[in-house]
Image (cartoon, rainbow, N blue to C red):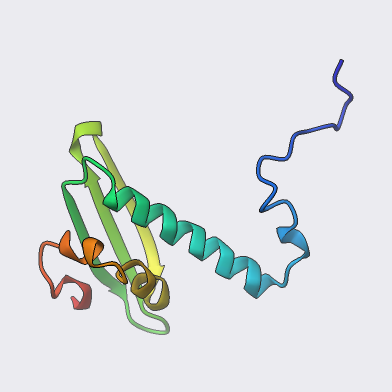
Length: 105
């Protein structure tokens, strides 16, 4: 019999995030999002990757669109300039961009 309130912790890595400084929690969350995007981009079935600037002031925000037509799937993620630069550090990710200047549009 399971006692009330006894729940499994989904991820031990994130179980203590509440005790971290908010800036550190945010940085870890952004890192997980960028890693997830990179893994999906470098995975199989990705047909197109588009990046465009949607907001410039007060902070640059970029829209990252990822199409996987075999699954009928489209992922849209909003990233700031720093997170986008982390994502584009890998040459394989840059190679999937249709136009090299799509980042600055």
